[in-house]
Image (cartoon, one colour):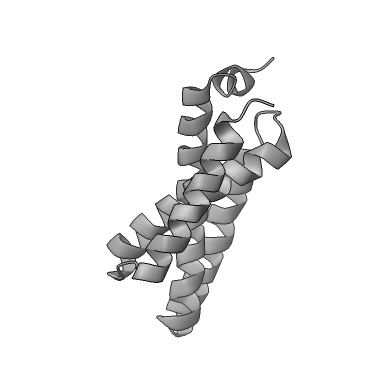
Length: 119
């Protein structure tokens, strides 16, 4: 068993690992958003290339441990939602709207069910 697999065996370690993995995914996606809609010329190309590099790093990070992929993705979606909203506020200055808060509460509730329900 490798170090990453030992880390994700505990709920706290798994959550920490997912949070660390969510940052490069959200940040990589934000590079694409900037490249498509906020940049031109070489700036656009640089943003798109940076997005591809960061998303490749994310894919490598999240797949280092061997774990239940189906359960992982459900919990990960909730973590990613929270990180993406934070990044959206910090990087683009956009606050969540009421529908985003409401839908996000459902996403997070679903993630908690998948993470905590032993059955």
